[in-house]
Length: 388
Image 1 (cartoon, one colour):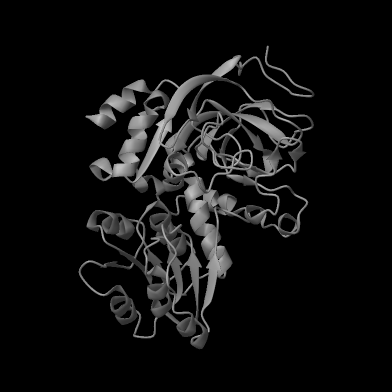
Image 2 (cartoon, one colour):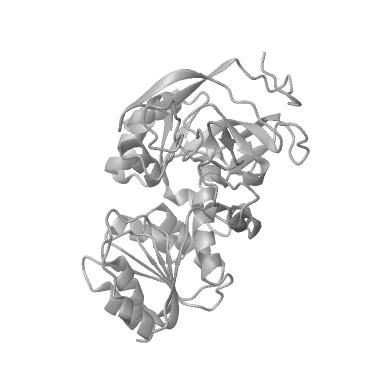
């Protein structure tokens, strides 16, 4: 029988003895097993996972390892379950939890900092100094589900209450998985200056974060919002999400095009979501003097950067990780108010048992896949429709 010190359950939300969960073996090797259901501690809840979206970072972890760190090293062959962009239903409460009740629908942030290091005390829990120190005899209280602790390619997960965002019944499961993606875009704009009404913004790279970056910037009142990329189908979605202009970098010089579109002087902000080799240098030449650049992508290789140009033009560069400073709450508020339609980036849905196929769609961009969602309960038929 499921239990733990001070844990509260509800017979209306029965918890089985085990769960189905995908675990990572060697690089690229996942298997579906039965795994014990974790028990929440103080200030934690058990979430019944209802849907989880696939992120490009999941693919990096599954095939290469970083940025995951399990038991102080690479995640392979450690019974580790990846996946981090999930939503679900609160199924059990840890000791002392009264901020949520069993049955609440929630979406989640990834990171719960230790709460005691310098960065956590500043509200920068995605830069927690005790990142990954939660194994062996050391437990600093840090969690990054899908990175340092078990994630969402499963039926249940434990989450700190600090990572939860309550959602209404009006929001679909699929849309709720996208709150964290919109939250990352929101975090980037928060670090660049918060309210950007009337400011000019370029978003480079029309992946899920870039596309929702366009939506969030427009919702914050930015003008103009310019999206650059190389895929016309994604640039079209950017227009639907609020971009004032789009630039296909295969057809024209994106720096020259951006400057022309904004009167020749460059823009106030660039949110770099492409990870392209020359992306930082192009971003620096897109912003005006004193402008700001947010780096939100993980480039595959180290890049050469023209630092002298950045210094001469007093350009500020910010790196962000994830969706810090409670940005998911602000993103969810925009989505709940229908300020933009995040579901435009959701393209495919699969069942939990078909995760390998879902990962293939995401990795190879089959059928122009952008955001692929996996559902855990009673959705086997959806996979057949998506794969036809």
